[in-house]
Length: 110
Image 1: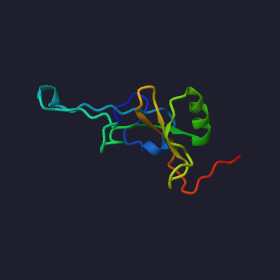
Image 2: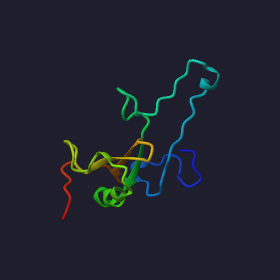
Image 3: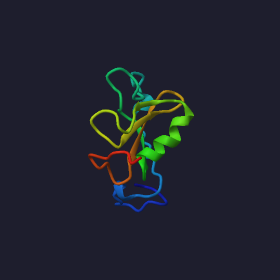
Image 4: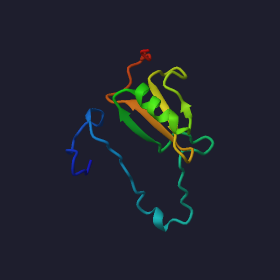
């Protein structure tokens, strides 16, 4: 992964430290026709989004909700439970997913 804190060959789903992978599209700096998509355009939602691994999606969303930017998908919305997409202040979708992957059938414990 090219990180000073993450060993090469690590399996991302097993990591417990924050990881943000940034890429550079080599050659695009000289391409006048290159267009960068941010994932919010019609027909391109979700491409290039950022996701955060958390221990508890429901608790994370409870902490995010008061920030007031809203959700594209709440943890219990849609057919995939235990997975959320929160909006950042610019309206960009940020994925909130359970560390180690979602357990299909997750339900919020009251």
